[in-house]
Structure formats: C-alpha cells, structure tokens
Image (tube, rainbow, N blue to C red; front, side, top):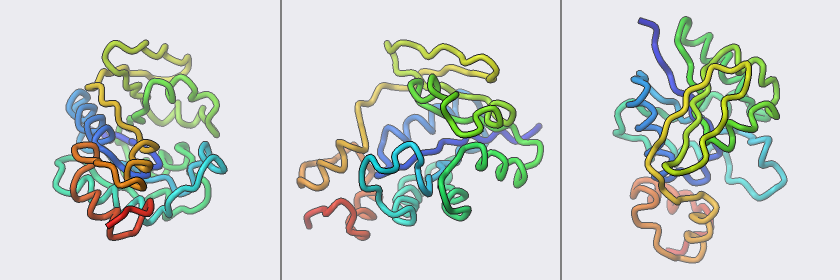
Length: 196
C-alpha cells in the first residue's frame, strides 16, 4: 500500500485548535498515514499585507502544537528551501522523499476555490488530490476542473490567527483557542508582544 500523506500548509501565525481539529479529522476521514503541517517560509499571498512572525518561530510553535498528537508532524521543507513558499515545490520535494506516496493538499474551501490563482497550479493538480475542507452548514466549494477533489466537513470552530494575535497583544484570554504548549512557546519567543 502506498503511503498516504496529508499536506496542510500555512503561515500558522500562531497555530491554533482550528488547525489541529482540521488536521486530525482529515487524517481520520481519509485514513492518512500522517499529516505534515508545512510552515510557509515566505507566504506569497500574505506578503506586504501585515508583519509576519519569523519562520523559525512559527515552526517552533507548530512543533509545540503537534507534540504528542499521533500522525501530525511539523514540516520545515519550505523554510529549508528558502524564498517564497509554493505548494508545487513542496509537493515535488515530498514526492522525491516519499516515492509512490499519495499526496493530499488540505485547504479551506475558500482557498480551494481560488487554487487556479496559485503559482504553477497545474503541477499541484498533477501531484496531489485537493481536500476542500468545508464547515458544517457552509456553502460547499465546487470542484475545480482538472483536479482530483475530495470534500470533507470538519467541526466548525470560529478561530482565526488574526484574532488570536490581537488577543495575545491585548492580554485577553486565549484559553481553549490555542494549546498550552503553543502559548508557552509564544511567550518564550516573545511573539505578538504578549504581556507577562
């Protein structure tokens, strides 16, 4: 049986329970051997829109988030490669590291609907199945022609990294929105000017 690997890319600034719930549910529903949470080095779609925490710090927070979670792994491929982060490059690298593996790119349904705006999206279509993650009751993303496509529902959690960064800066509670190990790592790294 070929290995089945989920590829869940993101800025993860910071990683939160919504990311973890998505990853564990997709892993279960698709019987994936593992899910790589791939930390973007330079997220090209967000560059210039806001200050992004250093890639090494975001990777450290993702490592804290997945520690002890069966089948989830922090992945530094895009950081090691350097430069802008493109899924086509990541899939090519993972394909070389895991010959014959089936790759599944995990996306929110909004991102999945816009996949043809991605750099070299046709290479993504050749190398992976798109997993469009819908929230219960949300409008399901329509499959994009030319892609292998799976739609899954995961529990609806209204958590956003943008809101979490603001809460952390303001000293408001983030209990149950990010895990304690992630909060400890955010404090250790001095991210988001979190008050002591």
